[in-house]
Image (cartoon, rainbow, N blue to C red; front, side, top):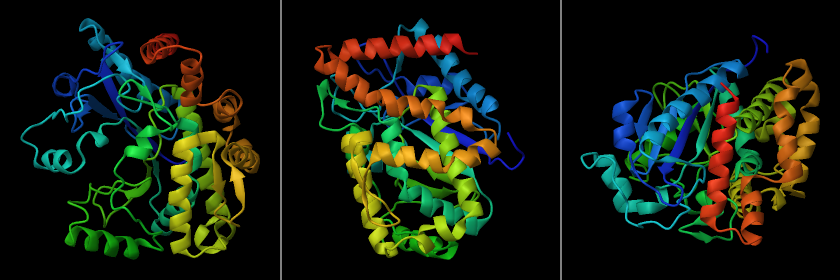
Length: 372
């Protein structure tokens, strides 16, 4: 690890319940644990890690709250459900965690249960604004790759869907069309315009695959927030995805002219927006097997091959920053398939969704017990 590494932090959303049902206790969890907060639907809860550069520290920051929560849930005969959608048969009514929250009321009225998903948001610290927006442009252009590695939501309401990330298919992206921001000022103007015309209720109501983040949005920004990934219970894989993003950004900083889509793409920024939005949908449907359009030259490429090529491109940078070992879980996913692909195979062999989740919950517990 190097002093030139970037800060990383996570917002991790979880579903709670039993081995065959979703049971919401987020209000109780928030009251019990200072590092957990309610989500609008009571079946969801979230914890946030403080930023760290070192991946060993990040591992501890990710595992410790989860283990504490699990111990508390065990006493109530409950568990953490690794799916990123409400996979078991469930009540399709929104279950409010806070009936007095006006913003939650707006979400319930306008989006209903489509918002009830779990994910992990990956934050990368970048305080130079020009570099930040260049990184947002590049990572957005390749966001479909990270979704494909993380996909963990092929089931909904005790049925198999036709999607590897049902979460990203159903999630109400808002506003529907998000431009490629050419600089900080273009972002400020766009945010202010969309709040003024009620496309967004407030600064938080910007739900896209990626967005700038910081202590005083839209004016003071210090990080990139990638929001597209499904929940990843394998922390080593989550750190592998994070390392891949960080390496890509570090590479960008040394090769702005050839890696910033503003300079390096044959497409206009309006065309890039359409291509990336379509890539995200394709990846949500077929993940690693999806056919995507490369943002640089417009060539069609299978997602798995694009990731393999990108890992090859990052090889020297990963060696330079002593991060090559962190990418091993990604090679494993390319070889064995992501979580959704594994679950779909089990389902096709005749296992029920309850049986599949029970196996994954037990695997998740085993991985937590093996690591401190």
